[in-house]
Image 1 (cartoon, rainbow, N blue to C red):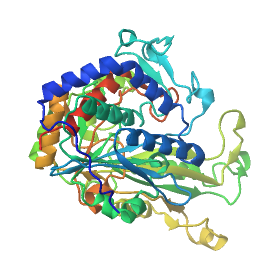
Image 2: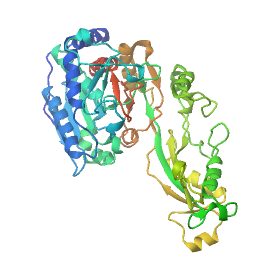
Image 3: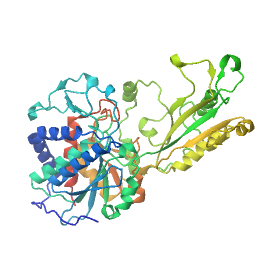
Image 4: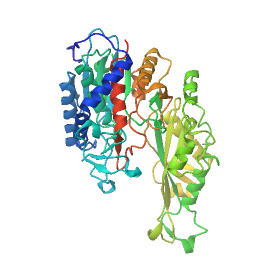
Length: 503
């Protein structure tokens, strides 16, 4: 049931964006030290989704921080599952409702890979890979530089937006400004664990989400060029594992090599048949269902800087897949060999013909591609290469009947999602974001990664935009995750501007 009490802010005029930016900058300068300390406290609470006691501590802390700012909040719960922190900030006379989605959980950590303890935030003069030196947390604003960084798990993915949202509310309230939309805060606690209960949460709480006109997903990094960006879609994801079979037990390669079929060779040939020499997928129909871009999306794509040479140098890649640019490749479904296994290598290598070989295949999907159909197409290709497909390890009778056997284990997944840039409410967000970012703002039709955005765009039938604020080199999901301070300040200004954009 929707929380029904209303909040009336003290001043009823709407400032121009330039004034909002100036007020945000003044607030940051006055309160920057405390903002970093608040961020430090939030980051110090371990937040792996499967660690329910600490996840609940995160949820309780965030709920209390929202309530301090007049946001009526509650925890949406399911047994044994991280809660959703839900907050509602109604504004008298508002004609639309905007929801801010953030996830407060983070990836698991291997402390042995970190330079410092991931749950004890540390402050550095610049990025570690660039020779950054550890500093004390600042005690005055003149000690803060935008190139400074905070290192901790979830510094970049995804606790930074929480602090920017809380700070934006502080700035608005301290200056007695008017929020122009009803605001919903929807903070998830298991995104990094696959958002397995997210659909159920949405279904069980439709009364809380049906009135939302726009979802703003505060997640991800800015563009690799360091330019800010808005992203209007994500790729979907699915995959499978393929196992090929040789003898029913490992055999001595001296006695049986050159006679017994080698499962690794069978699998290598099968995988090689799925792509051409340029890295394009040549499975029949794999690209057929791609939904074309609109004219506005094509124009936006043409304005995105080419970063191929930068990425090649940064990542040590001489010959990337495909003949198109990096930006264009993100608009096609991909097929990636995520892992290979057969026998042993190095000191554990043995003179045997292994019994099996397995490949883990990941597929990223674009708008128009159905996850189940894409897996059907891959299976059809496997059959076209002479393989008989099974779902369990084959018995003796099956082995004797078919010359080539592949066990296919299909993974779950979800489709891609994309919101049209032409919608009036989307144009309002673009305009307001440009007021903060200027003409540097990039508009990306889709992100390379995946999020269950389809639950909002396809099932709730509401537009959604991704608002990335983290630096592109934030090491999300990896050791030494970090956030650049300049990106944190950008997030504060962006949230403040969107909360006060014209009606």
